Length: 391
Ligand SMILES: Cc1ncc(COP(=O)(O)O)c(C=O)c1O
Image (cartoon, rainbow, N blue to C red; front, top):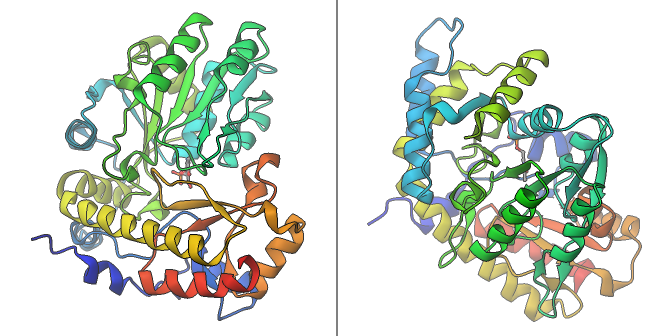
C-alpha cells in the first residue's frame, strides 16, 4: 500500500510564515489574513520525505562552496524521463538552467533574431509573451479554439499560414497546456513537428507540467515524436515536487548546433546553474519519489473530480474546461456578464485569490484560473466562498 494516501495529502502543510509567495506575499499585498490562496502554481503539500532528507543532508555539510551539476544530476534526470515518460534523453544533450522561464528566454534569444516573430497559442502562461517581447522579438498569435464541450485545440491551418508567410520564424509551445489543461495527442504533436520541419522553424516546447497528466492519459514528450527529436524541450522537477523556490530546470536538445547556440547564450547572459541545495533536492526528486508522485496524482484527480462536480451542481453559468492535466482549472465565467475588474474584485471580496485570466493574454478575458493543488478541505472551503460570485 502506498503510504502517500488520501490522509497524507489531506493533512497538507502550513506554509504561513515561510516567506512563500502563495500565502505570505498574498497576505502582505491584500492585508487580508482570511484570504484563501488558489492562485500561483505551487501546491500546499509537503515535498516528498526524500527531498527533505536531501536538503537536510546538504544543510548539514556546514560549507557550501561552488558546486556544478555532475554526472549523477544528469543521470537522475535521464533515468526519470525514461521511467516516467518512456523518453530517451542522453546526458550530453542536457543543459542545466536555473528555472524554466530563464530557459524560455535563453532559447528565444539563441534560436531567433531580433525582430523575428514567434508563434504562440493563447490563452497561454504569461511569461511566454514576456520572454518574446522583452527579447525584442514579435509575438505572433494563433489562438486555441474551443469545441462545444469547452475543450481547446490547435488551429493548424492558421499556424501554417503564419509560418508559411514568414510572419513566425519559430514556435513556442506548452505541453501539457497551461492554462487549458490539454494533453496533446501523438497525432497533434506529429502535425506540429511536421509544420516546424517544413518551414525550418525551431520548436521550443515547455514540458514543465508533463508529470501531471491524469490516467488514462499519457504525456508524449515532443522528443519522442517523429520529426520532434530536435526540438528544444524544457523541463523541471520544480512543479511536480513542490520545489519551485529552489530554481532548477533543464534544457534538452539533441541538435548539437542549436544546443551550442543555447549554451553560448547562457554564457553571454550570465546564466549559471549550480545551486547546491537545488541540485541535491532535484536528484532526490528524480530518483526516490515515485511513490509520492503516484499518490499525489491520485489525490489531485480526486480534487479535479470534486471541483468539477461542485461547479456542475452549483454554478450553472460557469463552464469548467475538462482537465486532462495540471492542477490548474480554467473556468469560463463569461456568462456572468461581469467586467474582468469586477469579477476579480468580487472574488477577492469573497476572500479567495485566483489568477486573473488576463495573465494568459487578452483571450483570457472572462476567465479565471483556480489552483486545486491543496488539501480537499481547503478546496471545499474556497469553492463554497466562490458561490458568492459564481453561483
Ligand atoms: C508552462 C509553465 N512554464 C514555466 C513555469 C515556471 O517555471 P519556473 O518556475 O521553473 O520558471 C510555469 C509555472 O507556472 C508554467 O506553468
